[in-house]
Amino acid sequence: MGRQKIMANETPLFNVKVILAGDGAVGKSSLLRRYIFHDFIEQHKMTIAMDSYSKVAKVPGLGPVKVHLWDLAGQPQWAAVREGFYLGAHAMALVFDVSRAETIKGLPNWILECRKKAPGIPVLVVANKIDLPPKVPLDKIAKWVKDNQYELVTTSPKTGFNIELMFEKLGIMGVNFVLKRR
Ligand SMILES: Nc1nc2c(ncn2[C@@H]2O[C@H](COP(=O)(O)OP(=O)(O)O)[C@@H](O)[C@H]2O)c(=O)[nH]1
Ligand SMILES: [Mg+2]
Image (tube, rainbow, N blue to C red):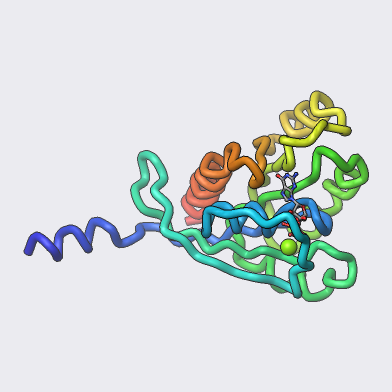
């Protein structure tokens, strides 16, 4: 009986699908790797099309939420395959690299690409590699995020900074999106 009760309590009430998007080498796979495997590797290996992982996350106030994380390949040559991956998604992490200014240019296009297949999906903008000296106008980005009702988090999978917070936010945003559409 006791055992059954524990298992029942741990059954996730929600399943959410989360997309990790952003240009190549901004750190999408590293964010996932830090969250799932608690480690970090310096060497960059391009993601082939997509990788996916799931994790039961404890979201405060909601209990266990099963988060299905889809790590997309950001390079332009994967654009056609990416389209199908957005279908049925509940939240989007849009990652850029604070040490490479060119990675902020494409942010609006990433949102357009994703929202074509997942209309109205909530967006968490992720300012990654915050352990490095920033070369982007973070105040302007914060204003753009606020004006568009996105959310923002600064992270570093290298140091582990804000990794749990990032995925917790995505869980909450995903659940809210599921509830809104019920
Ligand atoms: N200094 C630093 N390097 C990072 C960080 N996150 C990722 N990297 C490095 O950036 C490169 C690209 O990372 P990767 O996760 O493969 O990027 P992806 O193409 O967006 O999946 C790798 O060499 C990582 O080691 C970070 O927070 N700080
Ligand atoms: Mg990758």
